[in-house]
Amino acid sequence: MTETASTEGSADSATRGPAATRLEQQCRLNDHFKTVYAIIAGVAITDAIGALTSSDGGALIEQRVMRFCTLLITLLPIFHGSDRSLEIRHGYPAENTNEKTNYVLDVYLLIITATLFVCLADTIKLSSMAFYFWLGGVMVFDALVLMFDLGKLHYFKIDRPPQPALWPAYIRWIGINIALAIICFVWAFWFPMGAWMDYWIFMCALLRTIADYWFGSEFMFP
Image 1 (cartoon, one colour):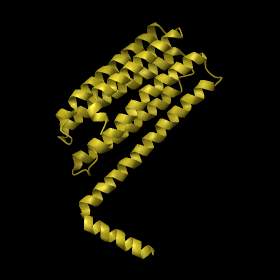
Image 2 (image 1 turned 180 degrees about the vertical axis):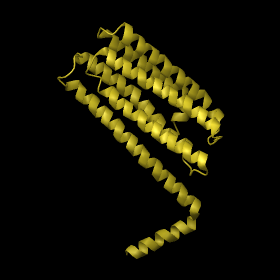
Image 3 (image 1 turned 180 degrees about the horizontal axis):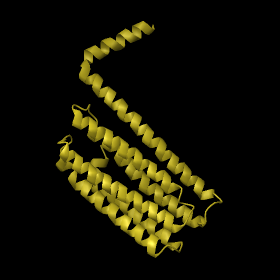
Image 4 (image 1 turned 120 degrees about the vertical axis):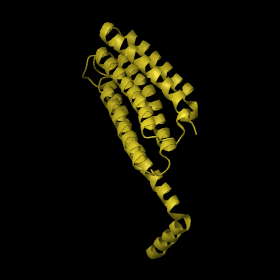
């Protein structure tokens, strides 16, 4: 029975050819890295939920709730975009050293971005300054990743998908990330007190998320 299934699988692979087999392997590899990203993002959300009921830290419950909502609406579109990035830009086997290097860099940067959200989740129960600082830091890092991404696509001469299709969305994403980062840093260092500021930051993050999907709708949805 096992030998028959193995033989049929080998015959099927031979019939479809090596190109189809490599494509399947690439899709599985993407799925594995998506799973790693999802696990880390899940840890961030779990930590954020734990911070809501934790007795540690000095934040009020309404502050923690608003910070949790801010983290959630910021994390989800970035997770969404990361998933689509692997599908669109790496949905095919790497053909040369440049494409392989580009893939490895993209995967590592995605995992680092997810890990930063875990750090952000741990600040929900702490001071306003800590949360705003980390949220601003995540936004700056994501903007730098987008800039670096455009640069390496040009340097490696990678044109799958065509670069002109990426530039408009990337430039707008960089802009909205930097805008939210500036707001967070200003609030962290000049206006660190007051629960009402958490509501303000949440509204700014919500507008960033709406703009994220508005500017990148063609990239974000199949």
